[in-house]
Image (tube, rainbow, N blue to C red; front, side):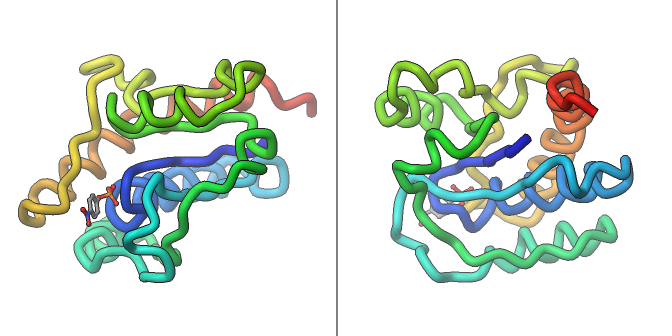
Length: 156
Ligand code: 4NP
């Protein structure tokens, strides 16, 4: 199973989601069964490392975040089993990009957040560290449900 987290710039939210979900996958002994990556809808940060505030938020929670930003490629619409957008704008853009046969792969990150199902993971780029901590919390709450969903489709 292959899971791709998508945000706008691929420097703040989706790299953090990738770090949180990868950690959960590893702790559940599923590293060789679930592949995790992240990308962006835009190329304005292509080649950049993740935002320092995402890196530091991850570190504050004991997670190492290393990622180089990139824009989603058309072949990835087919390659991944789950394509997870962070907010309604991401979902709208992905709906326009994805071929009709692949649209069922598309989910919103907080689909699995029982405290506010399907709410946005807001863009923290123009705010302070507290916004990144909020992103971490929203993503962490959602990742357990996502893991259960993905595990249900693993034929082990
Ligand atoms: P992200 O945040 O989509 O969570 O990576 C953003 C990063 C940069 C910009 C917008 C959103 N930007 O406009 O440069």
